[in-house]
Image 1 (cartoon, rainbow, N blue to C red):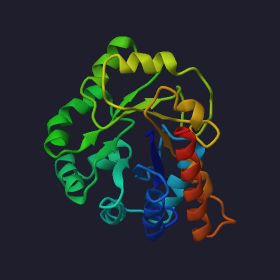
Image 2: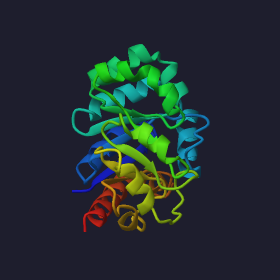
Image 3: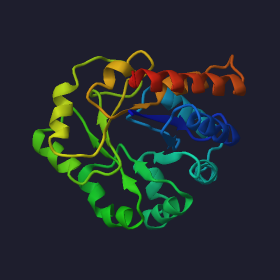
Image 4: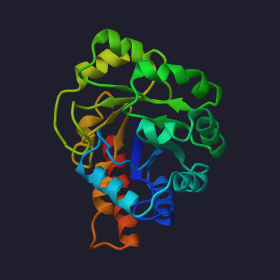
Length: 246
């Protein structure tokens, strides 16, 4: 069974909504949830996620809100935190990682933490049974791919193309996938540009897909009330899960 990872911006449009949405997605086919940590300059994210980040911050998002959401969600849905390193560093990593483990958060996705810099935290992650998700990109050399994936945990985040999330750019991912799988048994999930139209193509040769902007697009629609947004996101999750497992 191919896996579906869903990203949502924590605290947008508000904390209680994030909890309700996360639990609904877990019941609609989402295998793993990325709780995004709003950040002022989300450089790897497209305009939709950036807009949701800014709105959440404008509405007063605090890191404590992420913890409160996680406590409600993590016992019921496999949960990861996705954020930029400064957000986590400010919380003091030596305190944060054990706390994540205690809450039930199973991993972190930190797109701006280079593989080399991440090594200093390996023991901290490993001793608390929290995964630090590895990234690989089409611009990586074969040697670098081998190095990055050798100690990968949970899954490998395969960047579908060089750019930002939310654009459905098409490309042949098979050679890239083959070069990753040559060196690891860790599942490979495809992210960037995945939606209900592209998921079936993106999943070829991969073990899962990561979807973010397609969900955030629904959350940003002002003409939908909260229940409608949750319903549409749940329907989208079901559609994509079916598409990748046809």
